[in-house]
Image (cartoon, rainbow, N blue to C red; front, side, top):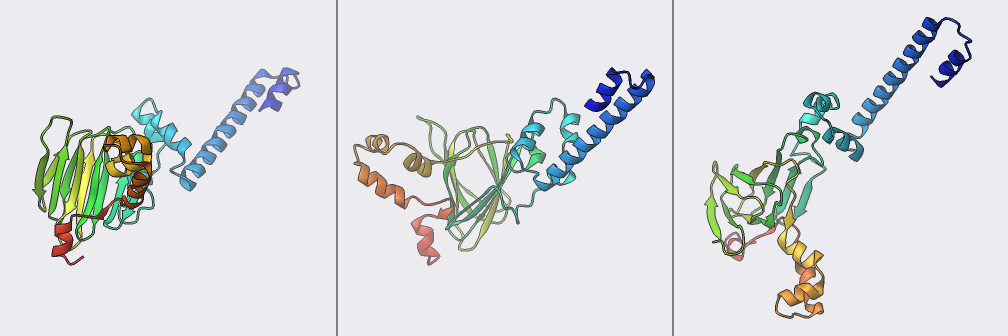
Length: 246
């Protein structure tokens, strides 16, 4: 395009209309090439950070939709390779703005928990979202603690029932069955976030601070505890393990 502009500037093409048609044609070809390149990139790496950021920064819904592929609106929890957390108690799979473009701009996210016998989704919080949790086929012990001074709320959740965990509350789901169980958790934020309490407390906060918080435990003791903290989900409470011979 620069060459055509240069030639026109030198009046090699005397007819201004010819120059304009050439410029328009060159610009159209460049736009087509750029769109083709973008489409190829979208298909080859649909979760590229630059692409997700571009979708997020759309100023209208139509603009957002113009950047999407049909496959962006479907997420396969059974075969997911992103958003997966595995531990001795099963796995959780999360679909959010980081790995599911279809939720961007729509204020929703979802996690499915596939817990093994006695598996526990360890105490954790979602700093940006309230959760509604549906028991698909399990019998769960659930509970949450909202803030200092509040009462601890404990319930049992059976198949077909739902429970609510308020935004920011520490909560957990314990499978009480001796067979696998599944729950579905929905959130009112596309990026709910997650903070697993024990892992964060012992794994991310300086040992000196952790020790002081626990009455002056020395650093070596804190380091020993860190080595024992389970990955989420973990095998849960002792009563269930005994009953299920685990």
